[in-house]
Length: 356
Figure (cartoon, rainbow, N blue to C red):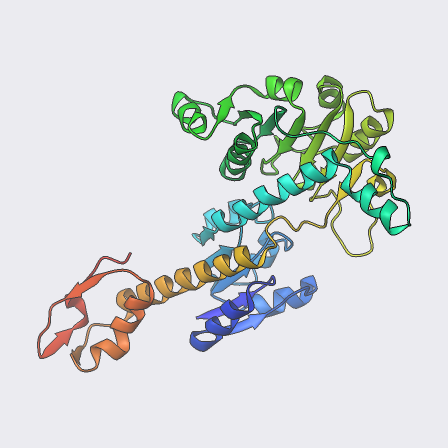
């Protein structure tokens, strides 16, 4: 199949895709270059840093499949995808675990003042008695968006001995029971905001969540609390966050892995504040997570290729000696089971496959 890879993914996965498919990479391509490269592509693989607009997809009449190598879909025009019957595959699980781990790295960096400790020691100042911090154990961890990533964060919080509160968009007794099994108490957003010592954000960017964490929310947060954002930059009103951190009435500090502006050369106004930790959207950027995502991409493509072969190849007699080399190897590559009727002359319509 003809594949366009628009974002950097695991190099081993790219190499294996090239063995079976026609692959073009377009990392950091301009919009015009992107449009020219996608014109004959059947599959598009992307991460969060690439905008997949209707204008872009309209340039690709052969596009059948978009593989989102991660979780969020706010960078994809979903209305266009639905209207044109384009299949969309997300791979949320591997990155979710990595994001949850970084959430705790940032919480610890804030609570223990690690960046200032590192900077002072590099300057020759052994500031042991100036750097008292706060323990996580016994604190309240509030999670806005206790879904896939948020639930992982909550589980880790419970393991650290934190009291974990979470809210979701569509609460139900079933959701409450599932979260309770992970050590998370389901409640409403107002209670999460009011009681959290550490408020961690894990919601998608939608019209409803854009700037949902604003000046009014900051005014209701617990005195001495921390904000951690690994969701999307637009979820937090960064001007209001700057003011809240400067005034220090409620917020003691903030850590952000995602930002309203994410591009080379831009310096966030928050960078001037000593009680802020900033990272460049690296939540899912671990070797293990990207390798796992790459493996899942290969599985999706193997499944797609096998499906196309079985459903689009015209029925014709083939020898059982030819069958394994042409079909069975593709089916086995999916890691799934199939069975077929063995005859001397085998018709493709006789294959009964349970892989799809």
